[in-house]
Image (tube, rainbow over all chains, first blue to last red; front, side):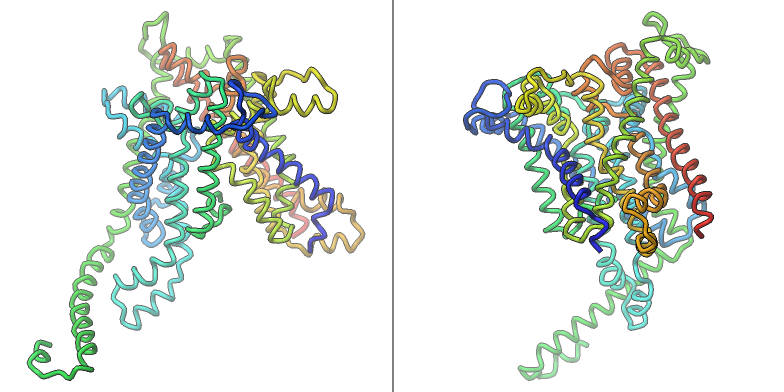
Length: 264
Length: 326
């Protein structure tokens, strides 16, 4: 069976994967350099850059704001998305294809365009509420993922299990909680997790809608990269990489989801 | 049920009685819930009520803004800082007639095409390893490939900056091999291309791996038994049969890299802006909303066109190629 994966192919795969990992490894190496500028290979060893970053109130504020924003966006997306997925998969809705097309269309339009279009509309309305506007912008982007993920798991629900439970005398809400919910939960969890990540990492929508008091992490990182040259940038980048690794662990071990499923 | 209370209940029966009572209570609750449930789900409107909030949300905050933007690009233009109303194609003409803007458009197309090409080249070995390798190899490749997706694009682009820098990792590696003055890559199109390939590689690998996974293994085995070399199997079986996956991947990668903003900004600096940077400059710096709206509209058109070309054309060709096989 393994015959198709020959040795040359294995070596090629190894080289490509090394190239995939390299840009994440190099900043981590550079972040411990005891020099006032960035240099490779790192010289000496220090953790002071990490201390500097963690003590920085701007960095902390941005991080906390991004967490808050992502949490709100996830909640709103699930509130809108789960009922919509249920309506699309379990009821007859006229013009279903059109509705589906509308719901998935934010995935086609470039994010940077979605962001600028929203900014234009907000400006026309003369409406100023940065947090609300960021939540709206991110939800537009995240909602399609949630609906797609939850719909997929709703379509896989085994209807005969519901019938069996109903025949055995389970009232509808019990069927919903004890038969449907356990089957749909992975889809909701996957959709919610993906939504959180997309919102937390978003740059192209936030860049139009954020302001100085509502400044998500990606924008903050970008300004730091633009204006400073010491290894503290590498330290922030490393912290973000460690955070992502933690996320992988949480997704795979705690939630029991595979990354491949999230990405599909 | 209240009668049980008056009877003297022996000690060991008490738990059962409590449970019976709870069951009866739940029964009443269940009947009420069932009524609510039936009312909510039994009506013909239920589906619409469930779908409506999300649809309304996207209609107001996505469709309306995008249409407003397209409208603005056609009905307004800025002349020497003053906006002039009325139907006009001037914004689009400007995009194609000005040498500066046209070069940016061409560069965007070039980067998007080359990114699709190179990601496809790198994607095939990985996709074959995922689809045809053992479970442990497949898992290793998938995780190593997808985990960086959780790392912010800004950080990944910055990672390439630390590699391509004059004092970066690449220069150091090249010095070991005796190349003392390495080529300047940072802030050139090459840097943008390298980072784009890295960032968008997973979007190419996953669809191709899916397509290869759907190929019947017995086809490959039959070819091998009949004496085909590995290369022939790759060229005559895996490549043509995985084309639908390649089409999906290519349209994704082309769309994403054509609209990329962060990566070209960090790695290309001011020397190789793409359309995304141009939109940002026109709107936030020059305040020329109609022109910015026109570039945005063009970007949407580009993405739709690439979807159409990659998916429709390739699927038609694919149908012709495999017609004999069926």
